[in-house]
Every structure is written in C-alpha cells, then in structure tokens.
Length: 193
Image 1 (cartoon, rainbow, N blue to C red):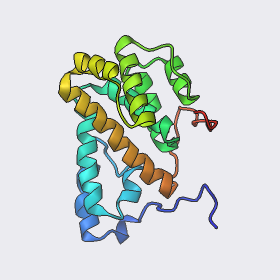
Image 2: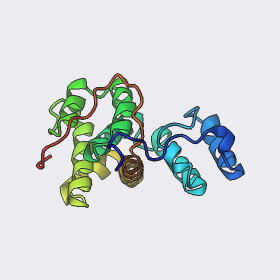
Image 3: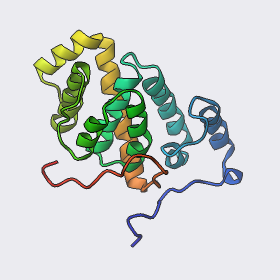
Image 4: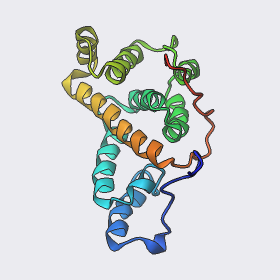
C-alpha cells in the first residue's frame, strides 16, 4: 500500500508527452496560468478532458461575471469542503490579496462560519455552503444571490463550485503534491465540519 502522501499521478516529463498531450497542454502554458500547474498535471492523462476543463476554468477564474474577489472566496470555500490542500495553497493567498479578510479565511479553514465578511461575501458563503452541504439552495439565499449578481452571476457561481469540486476530486484522488504557499495547510475537520 502506498503512503498517503505519495503523488499517484506525478508530472509526466515533457519528453514523454504524446503529440495530443503536447498540443492540448500548450494553450495552458501560453495562457494566463503560464505553466502546466497542479490541477492539470494529473488531468494530462486525459488530454481532451484536461482541455475542456482548462477552458471552463479559465473563464470561471479570470472572467466570470461575479469577479475575481468573489470567485476566489468561492474557490476557498470549495477547497475547505473537499479538504483540498493544493487549491487552498494556491487560492487562499489570492483571496486575501483580492480583499477577503484574513480572519474570514482563517474561520473557513477551521470549518467555522466566518464573521468578517462583507455583505456580498456573506451571501456567497451561504450560497456555496448550502450547495455543498445540502446539494441545493434555499429560496431566501437564491433570491439574495439573484438580486446581487443576476441569473448569469448565479450560474457562474454554481460553475465555480462545480469546477473546483471536479479539480478537488481529481487532486484528492491523485494525491497531487501541494505547492509551497504562504497559506497554512487546512487542518483536519471533525465529523461535524
């Protein structure tokens, strides 16, 4: 049995990439990410899936209608839900840089409802938390979200949660190596978290 920290799908040396892997990895390398970063390392084993995923992710991360600050908060909430260390290591520092209060991120990391949220962030937190925990959204939270971001924003927010859930599943299963980060690792949560 392998150790829990062993990366099951580590980087493939570029010299061993198939022509399809090379063709579909190049837009990621040339795009806003600038490299074949962590989530795409395991996904490279399925180049077409990787290609579709990266295009969706590029929109959701860099151009969604809810904006970078709120997208980063949603990513952190999703990373906490899945205890996904790679996504937390990458996105918690970005969320802080984009204006999410460090105290709010600390609460999220501990599985607590954050107190230091702006009003729109509080609606987003409720929306994401309901979606992950209850597989749906209450009428009250839905109405607040639509009032803030419109239907496109709500669909984009659902997309952020779904996309980062996919990446969390891939990297948790693959045991993807966590990059160096200024963020502290997510602590384990008790059964109630």
